[in-house]
Amino acid sequence: MARPIRSSILLLIFLLTTLPLSGCGYNQIQKNEEAVFASWADVEATYQRRADLIPNLVETVKAYAAHEKETLQAVTEARASVGKVNISTRDLDNPATLQKFQAAQGELSGALSRLLVVAERYPDLKANQNFRDLQHQLEGTENRINVARQRYNKAVQTFNSSIRTFPNNLTNNFLLHLERKEPFQAEAGAEKAPQVKF
Image 1 (tube, rainbow, N blue to C red):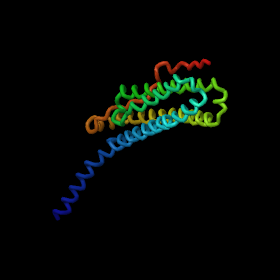
Image 2: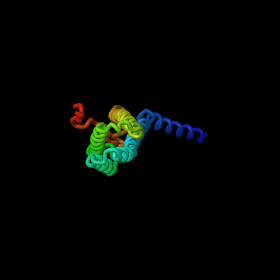
Image 3: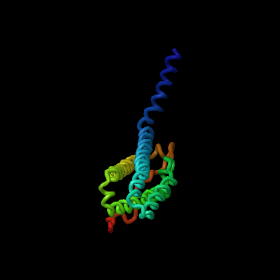
Image 4: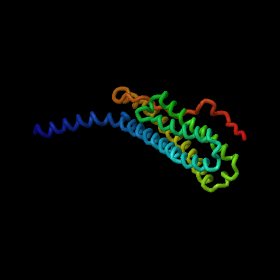
């Protein structure tokens, strides 16, 4: 007779301790943080795709515009500096590290813009099928980077909201101690349209 009572008491204790935890948001916070990490991996993959295309673009332009060495060198150096700035998922709550990463990517974007202006000066290069293909690939990659950034920012917003709203904020404050993740932000001056001069 004591055995069924003891089993019933243990079951009751188990239910009383696990039922409140199911509504504490612990699992949802974990899912949201994993979504941030997955979105960040997509951002890195699109940047890597751009970095992989750049040597081909530079070599194609070199063949037609050998005397534009300064612009080509700026692209190569910007690509190299991008490779030096690495962010792990542990750094996504550090605004300074994310800003450093964005600055390196911005330098590369600027160098690529100058390279495309150089290409406009050479009609033979513009007509070259390899160059046009690379230019389309690069444009597509820039669009993918933008989409990946937007998805990352959405995942960050969801995660940040989940650790700040009740009852998840209690779970985070007492169990997890997770910090807000940093979203991508526009660079200073991004609101102004770039000027292209020939």
